[in-house]
Image 1 (tube, rainbow, N blue to C red):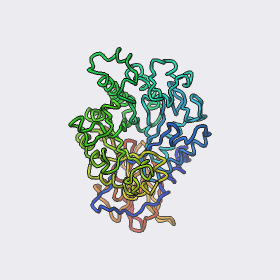
Image 2: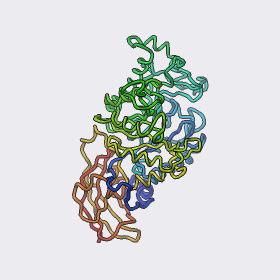
Image 3: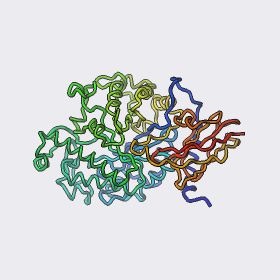
Image 4: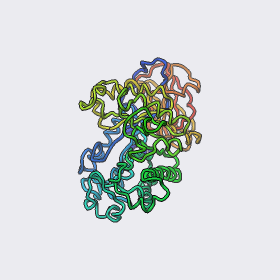
Length: 511
């Protein structure tokens, strides 16, 4: 009798593993070896209904259908991870004991949407063999400035001293220790209760570097010993980052913790350690010492938003990539690049963004920097609409082989999964059907299926040149290779949730 989980996975497995036939591998750079591990993610934004749900007040079934369509898109584009915004404005996409239901679900803050969006999203994401990174905005409370419009039970109503209005919005005050702890508690509730793969912050910290953000009372209470307001504020953000790391490591060390900051730490004109740019500085404007977090080892990964074209003044993608690579070099912090899918083909953008191959050129440039282990695309809708073919060009040029998500350096030495068995590889009417079976007590998260034209030695599995599919895990899986033929040799590798890989299975030759 098949398990309930096996039955649930059936349809998702078919979609994930057989929807898009794999093209024969080709690349403009004949010497390029496609990596086995590479972050390929996209952001799914919920604030003001940017992506999901597409509007307020959809039924639970409509919201579920929309989310499944985003997962189908991720599979179609060759992605392996989604970063889903589940706390856009001090609210929740799950039944949280700390904060109210998000208004972006139902149109009314605090109203139960009739299901658990986070629980649903995590389960469905994993069925497709994708990783789910829970995206939180740490301090934003509301996109409007009237505290009276918050839900009556909102923490900001109960603790009005926690709230700072600025720029037509409301924020939690990062300088209050009780606020920092509360925000961490609210986010850790999702981390501890749900089977997520990562905890993710975006680029919003302090909204300004001026006293117009009025935290003077907190500075008077807690700012002793700091040379100025900016240094105190920066320390407050540092504490949030450092403490989040400690809490993740204590509660769920197997998940990834990272931040996607704005792309410029400081300009070289301000600081000799800065980049050759002349744009907004996160260190000064947002009080976010992004370079320091990497150097101090407070993050598993950093994903700077390099939303500029190659050659763009005053912030050139081709100058920021080597700068960030140098920052990450020699650290245990992975470097992924935030890519501006939203700019490609937008008629309001510069001429360089009207060239279909601009984003593909970014990924080609990344290859010159081994510190970079992938990209995240903003945002999901732009990945879908593919204006001027910019996304499909990048996919064709760079994602022709599947890829596993990266392994966190701190988890790399953990116990790998047990070597699986390929039970058969048989010719069928639709190609070659491969059956792989797990041998360990733990069910693999994924199976990586390799195809060779001859027997393969163990060293042949270190890259993706012969990787033909990544299939959602189970005790056993069946996958059909539409391009398989007589004489091909198939192997399976088991992959765990940390993306660690087993030794390759036995090889099975197609007769």
